[in-house]
Amino acid sequence: MFRLTCIVGSAILVASASCFIGFLLSSSCTSENPSRDSMDAELAARHEIFKAQNKSCFILGASGETGRVLLHEIVKSGLFSKVTTIGRRELPFEDHLYKDVVQKIVDFENLSNYADDFKDHDVGFCCLGTTKAKSGADGFVRVDHDYVLQAAELAKAGGCTHFNLQSSKGANKKSSFLYTRVKGQIEEDVEHLGFPRYSIFRPAILICNRQESRTLEWLTLKALTPVSALAPTFITIPVVTVVRGFLNNAIGPAKQPVEVLENADIFEVAGKVC
Image (cartoon, helix red, strand yellow):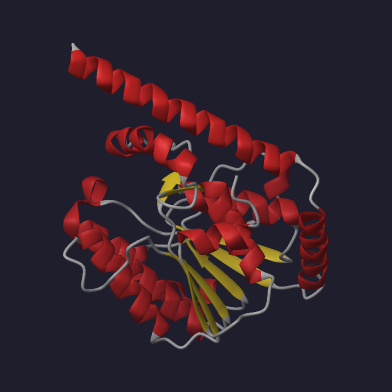
């Protein structure tokens, strides 16, 4: 009984602390902040300058959680004069907002046959990926490494000057874990292609309403809720924050040809932590 009481008491303390910190964070977000207003004005100016350049983009993995939100934000913002999705199946767009989106249907097993679909895009966003649980170890490597690398090669040959790759927190080609090892390897292999600008995003566990069920991920997010409240940039990140990071970074100048944005960096570029 004592042990149960201690566990319940600890849980209440953590929940209370999380709520209190959440209140402070939300208060700071809604309060007037002159510096934030200045940042917003600068961002709006960058948006207009970027739009005036009439750049085009493609999205790989637009049917996934990040890609779906990214596509929505791109068409809503009007940042690009031409938006193309490249995927294995046609996406059902009912909203009039997507009327000008060009859809290219490809066979990833024979991607070289679709080289023309990758031509004449200034910016590429790659959100392509699967899981070992869904596709098996070999399938995971094929999608997250082989497909991504082939697509990047075609994009480079087609004139893409800025390639954005959604990788993962902890990506390391020497990792003992398959997931982070493959992510680290694809980061390096794409870098060797020599894009004029290459941005690597390493988000932590994504917070989103998945269209597919991932029970283990859902349980993990529930368990990490108190940690996320105490340290918002540490181990989780909302998908919409990743997307804002993608776009805010894309419209800004490159600090160097190869950029690696860790989870906290993505929050910073997105401009909002709470």
